[in-house]
Length: 419
Image (tube, rainbow, N blue to C red; front, side, top):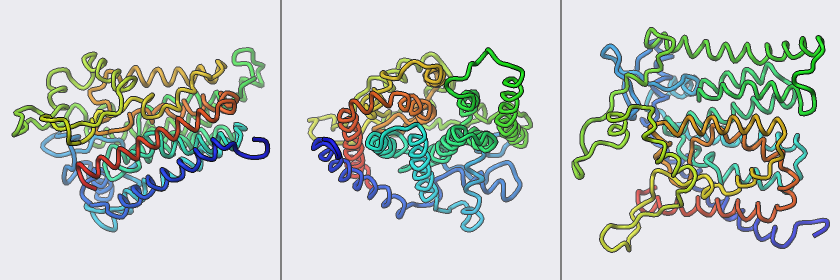
């Protein structure tokens, strides 16, 4: 419809508005009813405030035992973010959901600016922001920001996004600083460093046929990005040395797994059983992780007897193509060098995590580890802007579908496990 949105787009926007309001209401409710004593980053914050590397407690399964003391194994930066909360209220503090909401909103704001810098038309940009907000893992980790795993991601994702945003706008030092902080939330973020340099070089400049002036310029860019990233890595190694007297020891090898069998089934917890038999990394996990990443559908579980009563959802999650089908537009990305480099990041992250003992559960209508490579995927979608504009009705339909599944998810969870 010249000069305005088509009737189909208006209908889709109406549905998206209703679904979005419902999901925002759930996020607000979770924020207002947050309880304390659930997020291990409070314990990391306490260790910084008291200048002691060990933790005074253990709030979840990923705690390490070293020299008869308890340690939290996660990277440190979200603990720095949590320090004001812990300084005011102690380790039972709340407020992680508020920080999570701020990280959620910052991510949307930054990606709006990135898509605008990529000259994506307004209508398509709106749908991509809605997709990121309510039909991607970003919503789920924001909803669970009171937990340690999810808090690390909702802090790390906007920092990684900021690194890309600053590189696109030519501010390479701040880009490197943002990436240095991001890798202190999610260690694999460090592999985005070459992408930042590629963004600085630009899409048309030759990579290998360079004058001496080009070489000096690119060396300067590398230093601007590389020094802050190197400082971030050095900080992580120093943090490990402070805790375990070894810069390369993250603490995962000292995790004490729960070996108490379930009283009803007599079985060990799934992660304990896996690590006991196969270790943290193993090819034994590839089939499960690949099935859940690529093909697993949205799975509501029913009672064993008559299959008439809903009992919950599969906590292994839903495949990326079922939960976030709008990412199918990645198939239309033109194969330029930027897209190929982004694809290399995606493939590298996916292949590595196929061997990991956990695929990210507990999760339901998502695979939350895709947040590690979603920024690269979003840049690829920006390159496919012409196809997105050509098929924006399909894009809208796929986004609304992902939102609807999220609404069903929170409804089922509310009915089966409570608010």
